[in-house]
Image 1 (cartoon, rainbow, N blue to C red):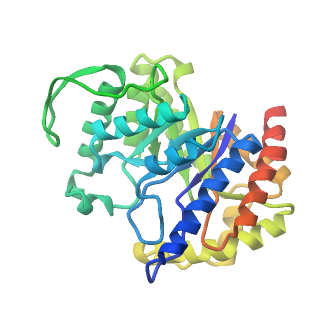
Image 2 (cartoon, one colour):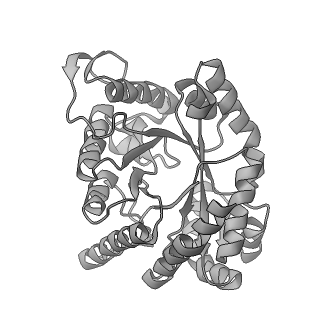
Length: 342
């Protein structure tokens, strides 16, 4: 199983913009974390895409290219690319360029996005939320698989025998589908024969098993071999030397971040009791000491029928750089060996 980290570069700047020097510090801290994760033996590092003042991940391909120049082995991916509000031609060019810089370590996780900020920003209608993604994922795959493309659709000017460059180092640039809890999204990934990255940020992870079964069923009906269909899991998580320490360090920033997002979406304000339920054995959050975290990853994998990748959404505005680096060290030196041995 591949194990890694996804980051949104959470800054906590909810009520005011960060000063330039603080942005520089946050970005340097992120690049240092990716470099350290590479040295610690983690398999993958992903960057989300948001267009909000509390995050600094508006241009993930640019940041990942900077990380590529400082790393050797770790795979570098989006988590996710909001493809519905992007031009698939440009997305492919950016990640093909990243693939060249990283010498074949680039990936794309494409999704519709859980926030809608990108839609008005780039001039798209949220009423076309699903139709945009449906058209654009097909175009992205057409470009990935063919150097010269003839294509027409509803949301983008047509292409007539248009060659798209550069081409990536990898023979086929990996494209995953990032999903939340919509059955249609699971089925679409299966029909397209693409690997599935499931974001579980609440509830009980095992409840996603019927949706994953739906993914496999759709994929097999579309003629894709089972070995081509694989599942990854993305969850909130954190690792420290003891479980109590991990929870106590993670909770304040989690409460701040989820409280702000929850207020926008009409959710109840997060409490410590609610957090503890999610951090319990059946809950979605993977927080604890290395042994407990490894055991929970393995339980989640078994409950979902086997996963090939697990990524922690680990940063929040309450975590220090030292907290993060220690967590990365524990994942590389303890969590990954326990999972691999099992």
